[in-house]
Length: 174
Image (spheres, rainbow, N blue to C red):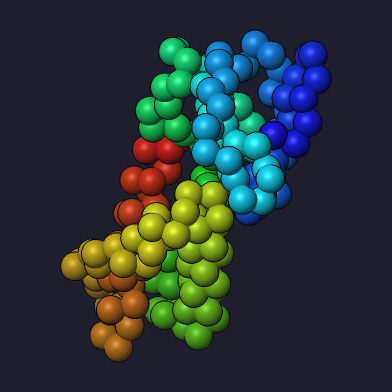
């Protein structure tokens, strides 16, 4: 706890430096930690009527049904869903261009760039496990007619990643 007043408590995550102000009605109860800390910091446990949500540099709260219980399957905010949908659209466009341009250098570079952006975005907002799962998504076996054989693997991997991204988007954004 960074500060306490009659109206609110200000919390700070010492590792990430996120700061959040909670009003009194957001706090159900406080339990002290009986073990004194070596650094002199007083520690304890807050049972909240809200869930703290950290998305990258943003921190917010969402009401819970019961104090202290997490909200199951916390979805992304509408703004983050719009960003994810835009990345999904970019990936589809790049894949279409890859096929249309028969895997030209420019289309391969554009596809690689958007996949890197998606990987970074997923890691930042949904965590490294989701980002790595995106890179490891199983390839789709189908390949368009007359697609250059040399780049079939690239297409199959990109289609698999796109399918995974579509699934993540539907799971997170409904």
